[in-house]
Length: 324
Image 1 (spheres, rainbow, N blue to C red):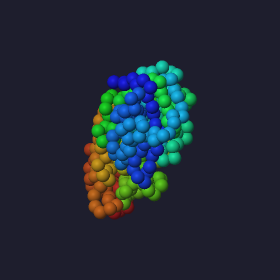
Image 2: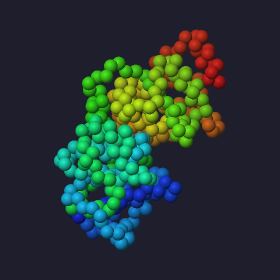
Image 3: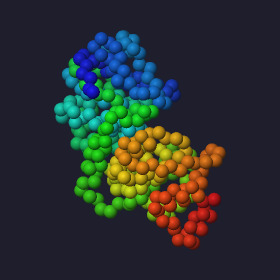
Image 4: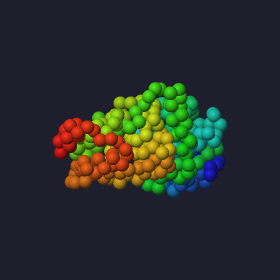
C-alpha cells in the first residue's frame, strides 16, 4: 500500500480561504504529480499543476531530507484534525522511530497544529511521538526516499481502510490510569463557541435544559483539554449534540455506544466515523425555517427509545413551557 518514491519533491503549502483552493503536493523523480498526495475535493480544491516545472516556476528547492514519510495535511481545524490528520498517524508504526513525518499545514497562516494548537501538542504526547520528527512543508523540500501511504480518510467517501488502532491508542493513553467516575450520558454543547461557529438551531438552550433533565451532563468541549474530551467520549454510553466537529469525538467511544445527533443538515462524516467505530446513530432532524428548531415531541421519543427516563411531572411541565 505504501509507495516508495526516489528523488521526490514536496512543494510548499499554501491555503487560500477566499479562493477555496490549496497548493502543495508530492512530485516524483520525473517531475510528475503524485495523485496520492492530493485531498479529495470538498470545499477546497487543488490548484497543483501536473508537472514540477510548472509548480516551481523558477523557484529553487530550499531543503533536503534523506528519508521521510508523507502523511498528508495537518489541520488546525479541530474536526478535520480528528478525521484527516490523526487517522494519517496510523502509519507512524510502520516506520522507524527516527523517520521524519512530513505534512502540509492546512492553515491559511501556515500554523503547525503540533506546536501551535493545544490539541495537536497533546495528541503527540499521548502517542509518544516527538515533535522534533514533524516537518511542515512550508518550503520546497527534496527527499531522497519518500514513503507515500494512501490517504486514510476522504471527506466525501469516508475511511479508506481500518485505522481504528490509532484512535484506540489515544483512548488507552487517556484512560490509564483511571481518573475516577465519568458521566455515562454527555451532551456536547456548541453554545459557548464564537457566533459564526455556533449551532444553527433556534432553540438549543431549551434543548440543553430538556436533555439535562434526562440525566445528561452538558459539556463545552472548547473549555476542555483534548484528553478530557477523549475521556468524556470514551466513558459515555450515550453521546448527544448538534451536528458538528465535537461529535467526531465518537472516534474514541467504545463499541456499542450510541449517539443522538440533532441534525441541522446531513453530516456524512458523523455517520462514517460512527460506522467505523461501531457506534449506533440516532438522528433527530431540525425542522422549520432558518434557523430551524428541534421538535420537542420527536426529541422526547428519541430519548425514550434510548432509555433515558422522563423527569418528574412538575419539572416536565416547566420544561415543556420553556421549550416553546
